[in-house]
Length: 416
Image 1 (cartoon, rainbow, N blue to C red):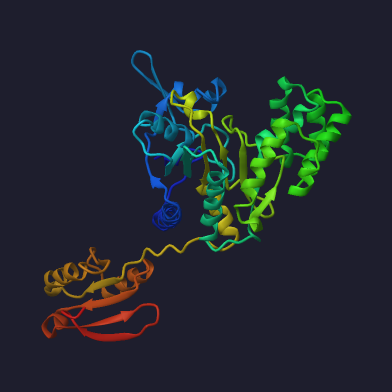
Image 2 (spheres, rainbow, N blue to C red):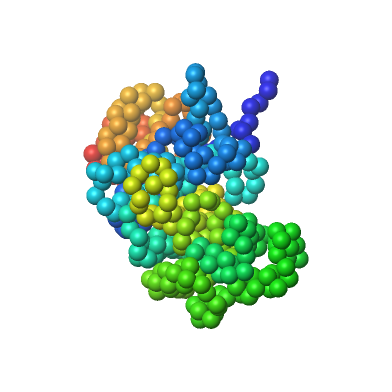
């Protein structure tokens, strides 16, 4: 008979893995609530019209699409920013501003699976609507840093690459034609994924001369506030630089690396952008985000500044695994009650029910021998063992054995 396997690019979460996931999500929730963000949830699917509104028809290649009757066409969400922005628009007029929301859920993209990139995946998405000042962008970046610090990671483990799209666009517009800027930025965003010769070739194929390629290299070499300040800047670049400086002053600089090649691939970023990588950049981006001031209006709402970020579970777990910082999966019950003899079973089950009022308790349902019950208790990670037979029922006394230390203690049934 054929054995069925999970679809490509998806994950099964067995009990211990599910517990790890839950513990990671607990950290997400704890940090977001600490910063005043409230949790929301959106439908798993949205209209294709919404999903393609900003990213265009090309995103359809990555959507899981389905149709029902007439002209209804839906797709599974590929991120949470789009549906959360749609949620915001629906109640924009009645919501007190600013609106600070977060969501933790799963998304779907139809693409080739690889390490840290799945077809079905979980993300934390943090969205901040209604605040146009640098403090909001700094808040978003500080949350992403704080989340990773909660797992015991420090500045030796990860880095936040920070840039401003207006700054980069303004610098390029001084020698690149306006209709070519977007394509050049897409190439710049790929700089870390190709070698120097490939990067030069891509820029040349985009129509740039050697002198222009040299200018781009000079721009991308500016990795401090002082170096960026010395670059020749037009009005747009100056505006972006001022925003960048303000954000930089309000974040933990131990984790920040100014990187003008960081541009983010998603179409809706307008100003500040950032990505979080492991220090050696061996993995995919752990988190990324920035300001997207045009999205709310695009979805039919009133013009509203917005900023946010997303953090993926799968890449985060890869990093935590490398740093031996994965949360412990403690799924074993507090007590395993081994039942000896049929005459004691009914009373033993009543005792189990009483203990469960305060503790997590497991017992034997297969009517196995005592030795096999003890083997099973150890296999499931039970912390303590209680053996109940006719003698214990009569005396009202039971022995509790700590399965980790082997220490035993005798207590009354009513006492436990």
